[in-house]
Length: 370
Ligand code: NDP
Ligand code: GDR
Image (cartoon, rainbow, N blue to C red; front, top):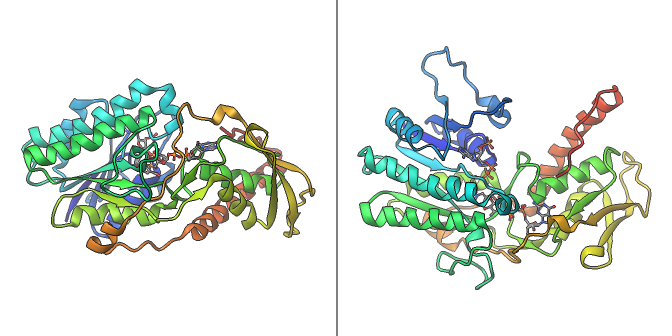
């Protein structure tokens, strides 16, 4: 039985990758942080009672900023594969917590690589590093490939740039099997609520159901190459099964402005929007609503721009070329953007109907729309 260690197991990708590897027959170990409340929502369906023998899904406390903890765990687990997914992954928040982000996302990667080296596991353990299209930052060329130069535009991206190069360096210096997956944005129904796609699908569902009046967003012109997380975690595994350790771009090769993602999400609920104004004065109004379930007034303002969501330096345009992964590893994504929006909207409409039911029953529902 192959043994994998996933850091960031409680995150979006950690949850899907755990499911994927368990189905493949792996024993999966996950690193989770201690929190004052349970923080395992995304993986609760995989939980196994620690009192039962022969478990194949095992969680350990740890943190990317704690070397001794990482060394001890890797020694105990002796993993065949490590998927280093743990990170402070929010670009805007990294401007507020730059030092912590550098420590967890940059040095954290070094701690994993060096633990494997020091423990004499360089021959045995293969390492996947969660690199990112944010490395490309300020547009140098489109579409972006494995050869496009980097120009990071946030403390997050700079930390990930260190992680990228230290992974390449350990591969070249010590012959380790260590790879970067340069993944473009990937989303899903379990995407963190403060990333733009999920913020939009949650709000579209809440507005349709009358639980929220309006959504405030930042830069509506930013363009992203959005794929489905399920397709992307499969690729993480494929990267570690390749004969040679290399770096790989994973993307859909299409790009979409944030504004169009908003249109698509509301469109799923049968609500057509009209955008008016420019820059900070841009707003969106209900143009029509064909779904009789939703009592939305035509002309109602449902979206406004709030400059607090603008970033000090922005990444304007991402579009990736995954030809290498397709040709050499045979990767074929199963979802396109429309499938992704449908998946997310179906899930959020269902989730928000639960909130509506609770609200109607007199219970307080969460009203936090960061
Ligand atoms: P999430 O933010 O959903 O998950 C991040 C995970 O890292 C969580 O489990 C989080 O724990 C954990 N974590 C954060 N800080 C620490 C720390 N100091 N020590 C231990 N664990 C920590 O991210 P995604 O699943 O979306 O992304 C996975 C990885 O891929 C990240 O490294 C991200 O930067 C990278 N990436 C993501 C892309 C995307 O579009 N999703 C694209 C390209 C790269 P907790 O649950 O306790 O917060
Ligand atoms: P990103 O994702 O920064 O690309 O990083 P995010 O969804 O946060 O932003 C995408 C674009 O949308 C614009 N935007 C807003 N973003 C947020 N979060 N909230 C808003 O209200 C809002 N309004 C407009 C942003 O300015 C940006 O241009 C994600 C993360 O998963 C990283 O960890 C990962 O490395 C990259 O994707 C690839």
